[in-house]
Length: 167
Length: 413
Image 1 (cartoon, rainbow over the protein chains, first blue to last red):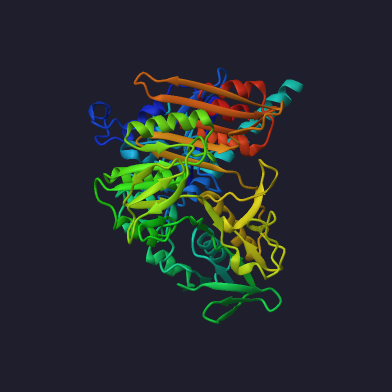
Image 2 (image 1 turned 30 degrees about the horizontal axis):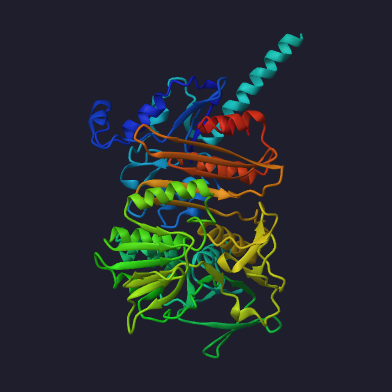
């Protein structure tokens, strides 16, 4: 299964992902259309910085799912088809219990007193909009194995370099 | 394996789901005093307000429940537990044998014992039936009195205001939501509620409910009488421990459980509002009757009953409310002791539209022990996580806690 994985060291803090996210969750799915909509669309990814490091943060799909257990309305649920935690807008009553327990602060308020969070662009049937928009590939939509393989390769390169230097 | 779960609310159902996940062949029997399938008690005030239809209270579809293959016995009152014979007794004289048993009987609303409290329009709000009976009484311009300033009372008041009633809340202490908020935050909320038409009377008690045959008014300690057509009593809840007092279970206010949700009796577990679990902030066993604690405890107990060894990290009090768009989330200790190791950081301001923004952080030395966020609550989860981590926080983290940035807090953790 593909996962949304982050190489924070590649993130330059350009916020292209935030913009693409909001547009992908708009009615019109275009930037100009989105700007003119009566309910401005909400982004579900937040690029933040502590001055030295940038980090695009969105729902991390926690394995213990505190938001699902905090939800009094059965809206926050595990989608059995995809294995992803998703919000059912028809059930959300806006009690904000999930906001209270999300350890990443990744759940936010949407229109009509519903919560919104990253849904991995389930409507797009393609890779998430933030990934497509990321110019530095800090955001990747890949199998964990491939991500790890890339890591291993870069580690081998690193070792080679170190050995060359030692010689 | 034969599992008997006593109770079919948050803790009971999450335990059942957890057991089914571990043990596809388990026999799971559920005994519940309720007459309805699993529903969310927390949604009853939303139903009262007319925000959601009744069907939305039932959080699991009939198909979901069918897939769990539970034997649910409705309207079944449990009267006792025999730990030697491994039996649960019911009021109908039945005996259910168990290999593993979970007590998740929840809590009941504390009734009011004053003259007139048996009049037909005096309610507590705990069950769906309560909500339906109250809803039948709602009509614009009727007079409603809430007794108590807690969460159920205020959420009911909010629902009735939305339905067009005139609503008064009578509070014994000097502030509303005294379990959840400190005085400053409570005052800001009170100001907001009053601006939306709620009548709040502090430092006052109801000494009698007046009326012959039906509620006509409530008499206050001051001697004053308020007109009333219906009364809702919100004086808190107490755990449903009565059936188990003679069973040998270790009970204080609730049933004492260890970090695996086991009671002192072999093969007997407890979870949810009836359980007194470890509170990692107060460093003692304590009742924390809120939905997320009940579901987490139910899930953990169910997993452990079916052979896993999960550890429950401990409870803490927390809650989130939204009244007419004013959002408040608080967690942990909000009114610290006055000893020198404790201190608070408060910020208060008004935004450009004049709406209040308030933040309180409660510290014991370098450890964060509680918070109140009023107005802007988006970072609540991060702060909750910092409290739950139990770690002393560096000066850097304490500084960025003010900045309102998500990842900066995560980065320094």
